[in-house]
Length: 121
Image (cartoon, rainbow, N blue to C red; front, side, top):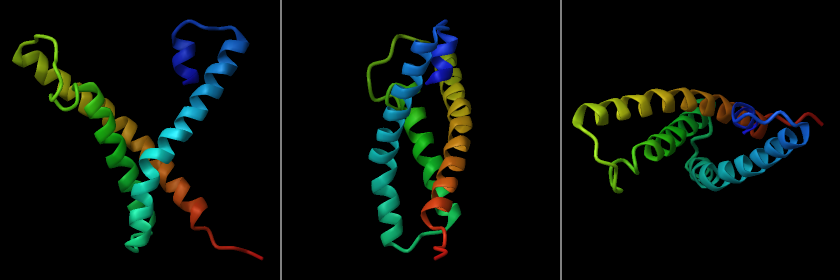
């Protein structure tokens, strides 16, 4: 969120701080609301390895971001565009979402590492 505020032309430190804080809070809420139930289901099913967490993070992010960029996978009304433009919209959505999915996989693996670390008492 901070990067988006910076790209948007804001340079006031207070606005940057507020953008960072709001982005952090809403990111935390989104991760908990979307990833929490899936992670709980995997935990109960015994799928508790790092690659399970990374896969869930990547797939969840991929689905959310591709759906957001393609008008709900084409289920919602889209502006009138030709077939070639639609193809490039989908390719762009897949490419940008893959980048975000890779980041989400890394975050999920890090969260897994923290959640399943061994206790040292």
